[in-house]
Length: 153
Image 1 (cartoon, rainbow, N blue to C red):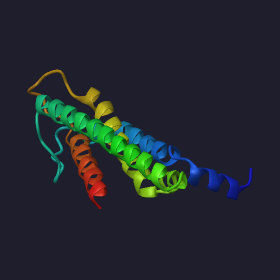
Image 2 (cartoon, rainbow, N blue to C red):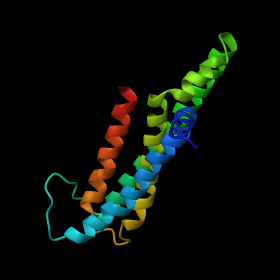
Image 3 (cartoon, one colour):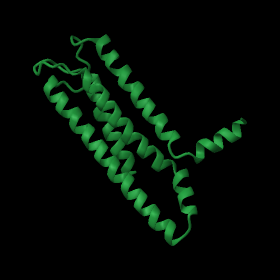
């Protein structure tokens, strides 16, 4: 296939960019805990969260639930508004939605944050008093804030 044809297909696909963003979240979920292990618990990394494993599990579970709920609301509202717009105006409205990068990035970030939090939950110790991986938690919170900020902007 030609490069221009591949570029056109990528631009016309609703799921390719979100899937790339989700893949990035999955890679991030595998790399960041390894960095946490490499630095070790003895190193107090500045500007990171320092909480115990029980609180970290609660935090990641809450972020996970919030992201998947927000994704459901955003996707439902988008589909309903598209249905109404395409029935009143023209089915070409759907094409403009599929091409809209903002919608694709928002969907991708929501799913990527959900995947990151779900995958990093396995890094939490079963002992509630143990310290949680601080860099892993900080990245989860930053990813959540970036996702919410991107929805607003």
